[in-house]
Length: 310
Image (cartoon, rainbow, N blue to C red; front, side):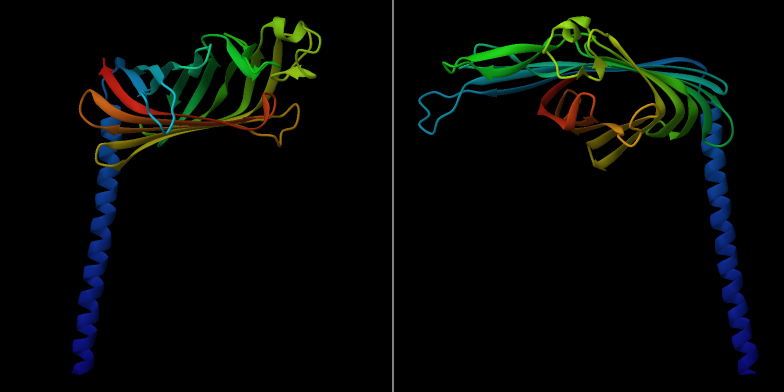
């Protein structure tokens, strides 16, 4: 009798477990179907979204015996998205631009704290699940001249022009596969990506101005062509309430020369929202490109931001 009761209990438990598993499977299936329906029912047509951010920092000293130097820095940034959707076809575009300056009391020059223009565009045709056929275009350059700073024999600060608009300028494009789970989590793989590096021939035609090459462009040339594999990923998530982290990573390997030297471009943007207008913003960027510099280049911009959404 005890064995029969034990068997009955075990059968009941097994039935409950199986029912729970089936319920969970049905819930997952319904969630995926709901997500697909939501994606399929997003309105066709154009959708735009933009934000302008002004970051600023100031330090002021008056009879401050511990020492210090008056300074002011400001950074203006624009982030504009314009997307198009028609059934299984989509076209996503994002324009990023920022420019910042630093002025200190005891220097003869205003110095840049940020200077970039970037355009990302991806055309995609849905296949199955979260996968799309895609074609990616990426363009990067800067607004104004860049300088290398040093001091002369008298200790006075001098500067030497080193970069400018479209010097360098980067253009990447190529077909691939696009995986997009949400607008906040996506990945593009492009195994046949063309990359052009443009420079002003002014920099490559001056004897002794650069050693061997300038951003990989040989002397008396203005363009470098590369062909390789490009992988790019985007992930945005909430760290905590009113604090978001936006990550963008791009990797490129040139098939034609030194494929093991992978170009890396990583951006991290953390926004700590105070209210609709004010936020504290941290932007960190790390670049590895041995054509430009044999090592990591890093940039960090932090400040209180005034935001305008449109």
